[in-house]
Image 1 (cartoon, helix red, strand yellow):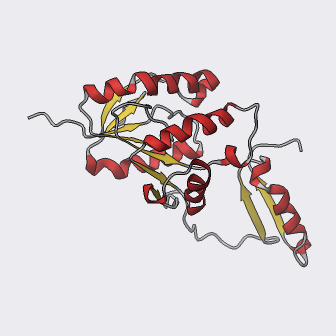
Image 2 (cartoon, helix red, strand yellow; image 1 turned 180 degrees about the vertical axis):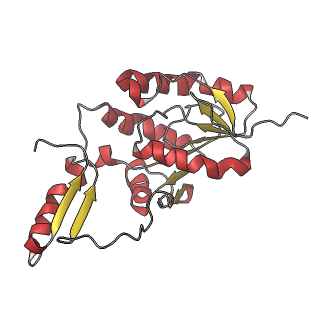
Image 3 (cartoon, one colour; image 1 turned 135 degrees about the vertical axis):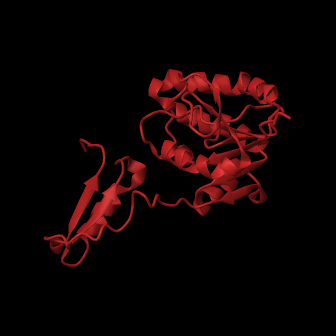
Length: 228
């Protein structure tokens, strides 16, 4: 008897660059294996049922890739859902077919473009017009913090009963004590990430400078260079 794939996992956004969202998705789907999901992927993943899709829908292809993915999500994904007789679609990003019979659970990572709107950015329109519809039609919404859960209620008017915050964790295979000898030199505080205004790095530098005897410590900034 052929087993029908009950759960589809939409990984159309995956690409080689290790971004926060791609790392999240790659770390998550192994824990979904007991559900015997079918992964919608451009490259096959060993040990999983996979349904091949185009690789040209990822952020690696810029705005064109994003647009292709949204169109594919709206028009092609429901066809795949019906073809495979699926019962549920899980998307690690807040994207799902609108006004379709696809039962979906989505993951919302943050609503930064609604906190810091930029009329020139496509993300502004994505979050103001597309995301509210996706969130409204999803069966349930996961998010990675209580702050994002509160934002979903505040900005998108999603009922709190429909939201489950699941805080992120770390990968113990990469982040663990190495039992190295103590480092010589001054103690340091490490900031890892971009220097976008909403990251509030300016406030971090000001706070560090206000520390008593701050010259006895070092502040390290690791991430892309910023001419500011």
